[in-house]
Amino acid sequence: MFEKPRSDKGFLTGRVVVIEDDDNVRRSLTMMLRARGFTVEVYRSGVELLSNRTPIDAHCMLVDYKMPRVDGLTLLSRLREAGNVTPALMMTGFFSSTLRGRALDAGYSEVLEKPMHSASLMSWISGTIAPAAA
Picture 1 (tube, helix red, strand yellow):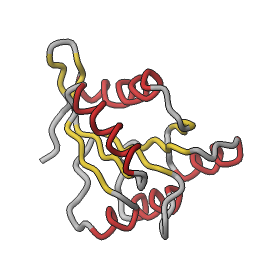
Picture 2 (tube, rainbow, N blue to C red):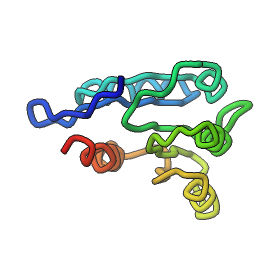
Picture 3 (cartoon, one colour):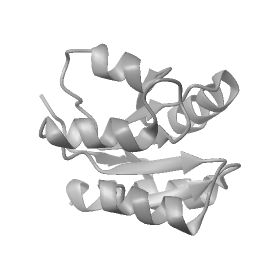
Picture 4 (cartoon, rainbow, N blue to C red):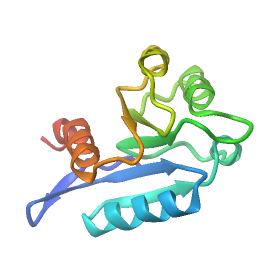
């Protein structure tokens, strides 16, 4: 069952899903989030996430844009069509204002350019899940 995020020792904690095909980026994000008290579920691709029949039980998702076979725009569109409303942030090394507009239209609440600053990422995560913790 979906748990509310909580604040432990000054840290906001919760569940984050990371979908990233780059091993180094995925590993770095996972270590950073776990060090801040988050539970992290990771997927190497959009295809891997879509093939998992377990419903997403997370407070937010961090999704890479450029992935093989199913990119981040297609992935979120499929999730939204299936009724998933988990807040999502797109990460990309191919940032443009056009891509940002397409991502926001697809349902992403933010787009961050890689390499990402941890402060920007943590600000988005905190701002996204903090209202649920109240």
